[in-house]
Amino acid sequence: MSSGAHAKTRRQRYRRPAVAVAVAGAVATAAAVPLMVQDPAADAARTSQSRACTPIKLIVVPGTWETTQASGPDTAVGMLRGITEPLERRFGSRISSYWVGYHATAFDQGKTYNDSKQTGIDAARKAMTEIARDCPGTRFVGLGFSQGAHVNGDVAAQIGAGRGPVPAASYIAGGSVADPARGTRGEVNLGDPLPGTRGIAGPRPQGFGTLSGKVANVCLKGDLYCALPQESELTATLGSVLSRVGVANLQGSAQRELATDLGTTGGRPADLAAVPNGVRTLTGQARGKDTAGAARTADDLTKLVGPLQALTRTVAHPVLVNTLLNSPPGSQNHTAGQVLQALSKTDFVGLTADLKAVQAATRSGDAAGLAKAALDAAAKAAPLTGLPADQVAKVTKVIQGLQPVALLAQASNVIDGITKIDYRGIRRAAQAIPVYAQRGDVRGLYRSLVAVEDRLMPLAKTANRVDLTPLAALLAMWPPGSPERAVGEALVVLDRVDWVRITRDLRTIQDKLDDFDPKRPPVIDRADPAKSLNAFFGVDLLSLAPQLTSLAEHGLDVAGVPLPKGTLDRLLKTRLNPRHLVQEGVDAAVFYGTRRHEMYGTAPVDGTGRPALAVLENWLAQRIETA
Image 1: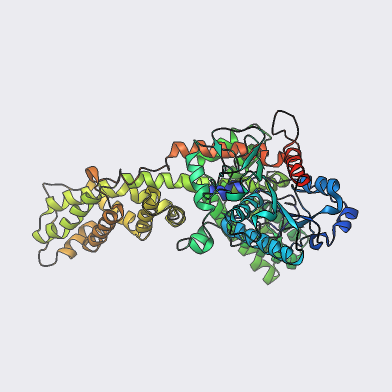
Image 2: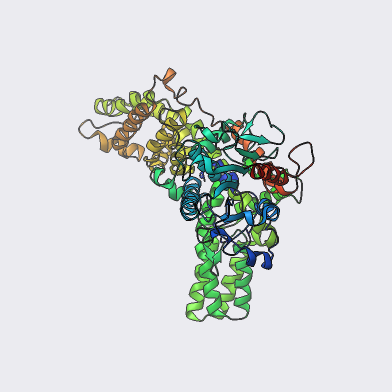
């Protein structure tokens, strides 16, 4: 859940929401922890220490993007070196470190945050089991940062419950930096108490058991990973749900919808600067008549456009963009707002066409056509190319983090549409259409069509603009019986409807109803009412009626509750209201800009003025000395 110390060198992916799913996953992508200076001599001395049978073994779990599954146990990286190195100097040959390599991602590379965390738990348990087997008598100290703290705490809780890889008697102490499950029963909070806050993923329900009092954490005020205000109900709920959900549990297309990868350019993972940089490269290649290079660049850019367009459609929510733009000029948030504004102004459809023209010109050897198509592509991408590429690249993760908030902001619009549906009224009116048609009762037919149009058009307009699939997938992860889950199930039903056709047909009917003259009603041929109705309305009215009836019936089934005045009011007792979403989105954006999650090596955590890492290191050292 943290960003990594070697964010610039580590292969990183771009993920869309969740929740990514999640605000837990979303916030996870916000910060970039500076890599501590590597000392080649120290690294060489450290080699193979991970397997040494020292009396005390540090099991160290880095944060998100600080490590990989391929990293070796001697690969010391990131934030936690600020604790391991002082401990190694203080205790010398008594102690050695095992660095746990694991997936260390958050809703990217095909894994959710929970999937990634589980790879860390599995790797830590395996390491401790093997060390205990090969080094009888070795005792353990656990250590983790952010997602790594989540892993470290979960393993400690398992040990405290008697289900761990080693007995509780061999576990000296545990230390967590920015634990997303802060608030777990039995933990030791070092530093200021931070009342009214909790970890974003929620406390471990089982507590630390027999290890109570042996697992400490440090958390800086303002770090939403570990000090989320209790009033941030939506963010907390998302964090709790998403930190416990793996890819295998996502409904339907949720994995695809909530994890979008921008892919690669030139063999390296792409960020938001890939388009402006690529277009500049393309125009240079076109001027130099480098057809082979231009073909490769155009191919890379073409692969980027689709995911980038999808990202823009989701994240460039006007409220979030304006919130970011109102941040101080020059701040990370303000730059993110500028980038989102530029993305929303970029003609991706036209850019795709121009890139295809570039590819055609390279195949035919048309140098003039290549130059023109490249310049046209540059014009389409002008909103982005006008911003400094290094700044665009830096805010990639900020925009990444805002994605689930923007996704839920879309949900608020859809929910607003759902509240306007009178399912019973639609059902009655739709069922009456063929009856009135068969009777030749034009006035009755008019009343029924007006009733349908008035009740359904507000939702049709909204549903036709918004992709309901990711919203339904996200909400479907809430517990059964919760109002959020019920809304998600309603969206699943609504997503099956051909809203393009219904909106078109309703508009056609609306135009005819506006021209309807009760004194001169159209004549309905009772022998063939469908033909008469189709001729007048220009819509296959009798085939539309069963669809509307079915929609109404499904809506009633999904609600599963008495509907006062025929609405879904009781269904929508939910935290997904626009005002709450916007406020929490603002809070998250402010957090992204503070880089608070990176400051444990310098910021004081208590009244002594000592940095948070120093406070935790000293606490662990005391436990080791008395072990």
